[in-house]
Amino acid sequence: MNEPHPSPPAASKRRIPVSPPGMADPHQLFDDTSSAQSRGFGAQRGPGGLGYPAAAASPQEAFLADPVSNMAMAYGSSLAAQGKELVDKNIDRFIPVTKLKYYFAVDTMYVGKKLGLLFFPYLHQDWEVQYQQDTPVAPRFDINAPDLYIPAMAFITYILVAGLALGTQDRFSPDLLGLQASSALAWLTLEVLAILLSLYLLTVNTDLTTIDLVAFLGYKYVGMIGGVLMGLLFGKVGYYLVLGWCCVSIFVFMIRTLRLKILAEAAAQGVPVRGARNQLRMYLTMAVAAAQPLLMYWLTFHLVR
Image 1 (cartoon, rainbow, N blue to C red):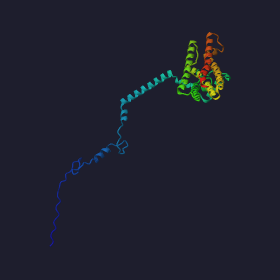
Image 2 (spheres, rainbow, N blue to C red):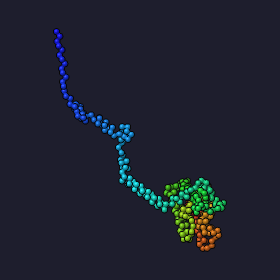
Image 3 (tube, one colour):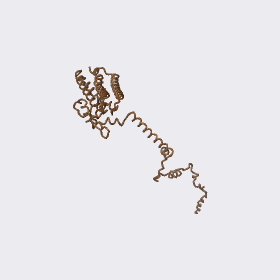
Image 4 (cartoon, helix red, strand yellow):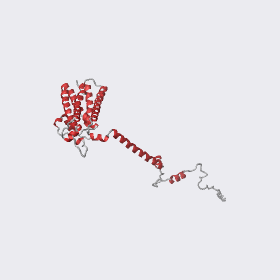
């Protein structure tokens, strides 16, 4: 006899609590914050709309965006510009940088011709300095124009040759080489000051500047280098022969150059101006030219033995 199968139990009707919107599932141990982060992440999109978060403004950009800081920077820039202009004016007052550029405007051809003129001034005829609109042309265009390149290089070379001469005689020392350089600079300074004082006392109206004097007086180092080198190669005989030639050459060079500067009035008129003042100017020119050979010997005789 078939027994009837028991009917399946009716499904229990349990009420599942429904969580209100925005709240997590009550059966969940931890809150799911990924959706919130996703919503927050997606809310901040970059300028291109690609879903990347917008980069926060840097402190520098925030500082520059401030109008007060912009005013401060503009004021600081104006102060810096005014300070630079003031420094340039003061430097140009004491160190004429613009004028110094003129004295270093040389080239290889000028240097070669000028050195030839210093060793052989007897063959040169025209000693007038060329002008263009009341301004002397650059030295590279006029062999008669003074320059500072040759005197500067000659002074440095003279110190090096002096060190070589002292080294060959086992007398080299940094102190002795420094004394040689300082004594040469001291004599050059005394020469310039003495000439400027003489020009002032004689009330000479000339376009001869201090830099011109330094240039003309610095040409004697070229002959001094030649004399010392010949002394190292051929002894005293070579030293006296070459130095004697260079002394006569620098004497002629200075006479023919300075007479157009110191005796400018007489040269402009084309006739010699007679008078006591003109004779004093001629004596001054002769004294400056005669001092060059004496200093050339004084600064080099102890280097050759």
